[in-house]
Length: 142
Image (cartoon, rainbow, N blue to C red):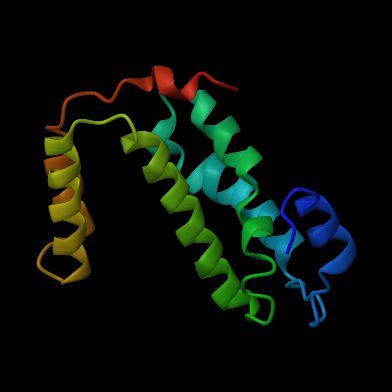
């Protein structure tokens, strides 16, 4: 193959054909609405009410629309759990991306403890309050 005249654009957009139908989960719009108006604006508001930019960032993420093709055949209940997981994952990514290594290790240990049933979420939350404040300037890019 002659790479001098190789065009990635031509390969991907003119010659590449995805052989399967593109399926989208029918609950995406419903779950996006729930994500924005129920979870972000109410249930999880306590997590970031001191920094409203986080709400804007999470809403622009469109978590339901990220999962729409990955989990195209999931029931509404399962799709809701997936959307919550994605929302929490993005929140944690934004919060801890600029943290110190020792803070991440602490959060990691708390998370593993909860997943293994060695502590409750409430116990972990109390212990997380001793972490130094996360620099919230990283949320000012929107």
